[in-house]
Length: 231
Ligand code: GTP
Ligand code: MG
Image (cartoon, rainbow, N blue to C red; front, side, top):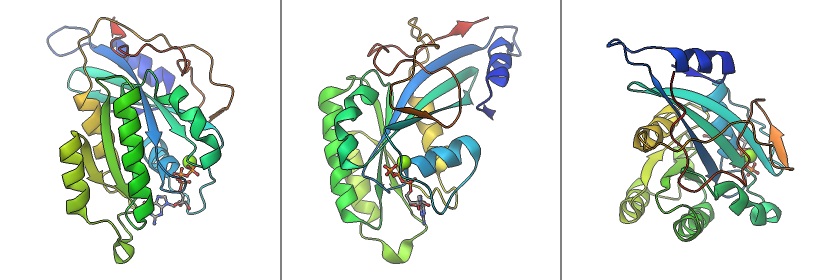
C-alpha cells in the first residue's frame, strides 16, 4: 500500500494482521541530497505522486512530503526532506540530515561532476549524520543512456566499498524509483521503542508540496524513528 493521505495512514495504523496482532507503525526521517538538477525533487514527486515534470522548478530551501509504504506487517511512514542542491543552500543541509534515519544521495549519470559531489555528500553523512543512517546512492536520469558519463560498474563498486544501497533510477520513466525507496524502507530498524512525534513545526524555509505534519528537522533525535507502535 502506498499513500500520502493522513486518513489512509491512520487506517493502516489501525489495521490488524491476519493472526490478530495489531500492525505496527514506524515513522522515519529521510533526506535527499545531491547537486542541483540531478533530479531529487523529480524522484520524490514520482514516488509520492506518480508524476514527472519536464520543467521541474529548482527547489528553494527544502520541500517536505510524506509517503507511507508497507513492509511486511509494518506501516512505514517516510518523512521526506527534499533539499535544494544549489550551492547557496548547502549550509542548510545539516539541519535536514541531522536526525535522519535514511538518506538518498543522488547524482546524474550524464554528469560526472555530480557523481564527485555525491561522494562528498556521502563522506559528510558518514562523518556528521547518525552513525546508523541508511544511505542509498541513486544514479538518476538512467533513461539518458546515450549521454552516460558514469559507468554502472564504477558506481556499484563505490557503493559496495561504502556500504550503500545502489540503484540507477529514472524519475522520467519511473525505473527503480519505488524500488530504491522500498529497499531503504526494508533496511530501516522496525523494532525500536523510541518514537518520533509528528506535529513539530516545519523549518522556516520549508516549502510544502504535500501538506502534512512533519517532525521539526531540528528536533528529531539521531536514533529516533521507530515506532509509532500498534493500536
Ligand atoms: P534542485 O532542486 O535545484 O536541487 O534540483 P533537483 O535535484 O531537485 O532536480 P529536479 O528534480 O528539479 O530536476 C532537474 C531537471 O532534470 C528537470 O528538468 C527534470 O525534468 C529533469 N529530470 C529529473 N529526473 C530526470 C530523469 O530521470 N530523466 C530525465 N531525462 N530528466 C530528469
Ligand atoms: Mg529540487
